Length: 560
Image 1 (cartoon, rainbow, N blue to C red):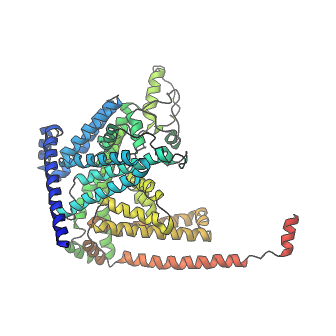
Image 2: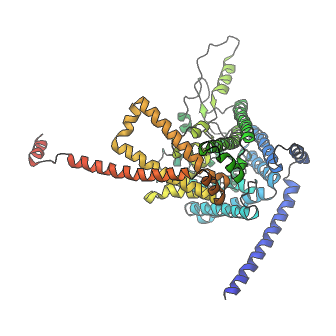
Image 3: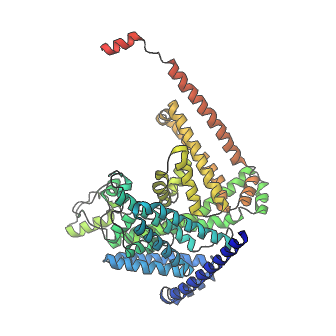
């Protein structure tokens, strides 16, 4: 009987594979005929690839990121929301088709259609967990397929874009549940209420949100209401204006949208920042290439100079590698701002003397252009990550849209018992990133380090040392310097598994470093346990030392 079931399962798998190949072949024909960019784009990719700067796939991806700026500018110039929706679907599908073929738009389309059916058949409340689980499992299946076809490879494919689609659809389903099914349970002043969706989107709106071209290739992930308000030229919620350091300029209409020129200026600033990080990456990679981190010969060669100097080389290599990520984050942020979705509000302009040749209208227009803020979509806090004093602060500064998605839709919705919210969030983050063992090794260790940090903060709070440290300047600087050095050392040590991906490569690097990070982690765990025990004993002793109330003192208090 078991053999019969295996034969049927194998036959079913063969039929499914044939159906998948047939659909993919038909989608390739359709995409090549109607969605592919003109031939000169492929010629440009081939000419640049001949220079040997990067691989063909990386060059193609970079040029498409630049093309996303053009699409964002066209989107900003369109006035009709319907035309913006149609343009988003066509432009996003064209980017996916040109990047990696039919899978670049077929997978997001499939995820969007299934999620749309879940919402309409099950209802927003029941569909929310179903949509979240389906998209996460679908992404995990794509990660598994990638692992089987290119084990532990770094090539770019449709999985890269599907990670963003997973965040969008899961967040939309939960926001629909908050807006339509649970309006009484959501605080009117909370962020959950600000992002709640009160109306089920149409099919066109859902596809336009998924294929939104400035954020389709590599994000950043935006909330559905932020996208909807930008598509309809609505002013951002008052909450965002209150978070700014000022309000609308004097004489400006309270519902004024920023000009296209101000969007272009803010987007160009992010683009220049991205070029700076790209230059830093090229310079650092030439001196400290990250590809050699798991090379046994390279490790043994520099191990002779000492563990400290070997670790410093690894630290500089990882710093250069992070500049590559900073480049991607900033260039994606610039494309989003170009479309207008990054608009936050206005700053109060400084008092200026009115030039007699300037009319009031000209001055008001210049004031609007110079005071508009575009920090609503922030992808990375570079200084916040590099100077983080804890793993929690580093996680909050790195890939902020993904961190926001994990916090709002995983951490805040999981039970806090046994720290399920903390460890569950890191496990979902690992599933979202991929199937490589290095991801799970890093995120589980990060969750453990964050748990130890919580214990230390509790110890300092129970002993009353947190206030004393803040009040003493020298002591505060010393503690801040120590926590930064500790966080940077531990983070750059354990993040090696995230970079090299496999467990054997991670063990190779860590063994060359004599496992000093694991030894310090064990030492921290032992000290934390003793600190918690001593704090508990001190607290109990303080309670026991308090004079117990006598009947006479009780009568006096009652008489008073």
